[in-house]
Image (cartoon, rainbow, N blue to C red):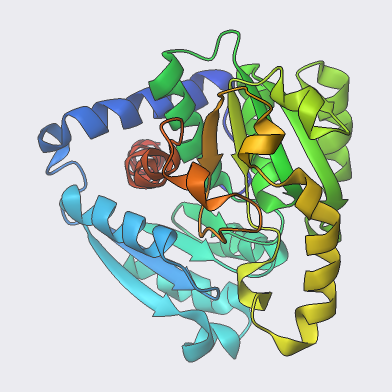
Length: 304
């Protein structure tokens, strides 16, 4: 039995196969109408969600399965040790997707579950987002050969899973990350990444932009903290540090890379509003691909 907790679990062949299957699912959804007939997906949410919630429910339903959304804090997962609750819960479903605050809790779920566990996002990794990102690049470019991707923003969970995916597939990834989210930092991953030759850290956005086929940005402020009064000092610190790295027409310096963003978007912060709807924006395609990539992932885990 396999889980997907970071993206490290997949080798190059497996990852490419899932991406190619996702493209097929997107083109020919009717072919897979009963691919998950009567299969059940338990969805555990400790963090709010739009894309993860909608894409997993839509994807499983489109393949003939069903979903059971469950709020972590309203269930006994918040009261009893995880090992006991998940041993029961996994006897009632075929897959578990968990969007939790702490990676340690995701690991606990996987350790005691009798069915595959998918990390739907935690403070360290966001593998489902990376799958959709890589699928989108594959759709647009037709392959990963000679592709250069720049990630600009906070070094966070999204950056980590993107690094893993690029390492696995041999994609050149430039990191412009003036701020590191300490809760997300994976020292071992970064040592491997920088030694690989595929991943580089770049200090200036202008140097990265001139080399990039794709430029990817993410929110500077964690979603759950954006409006919290006690987080405002940290919010202002991040804005002040990151504003020179905003994706805008001036910073693009005449270059026209494809623009990516994992959403939700805060226009006027990490990205200029005009670029969200620009001709080079593939943001909505990237967001739509969450569902297709996750459908392919669920099929992969069920077949294993």
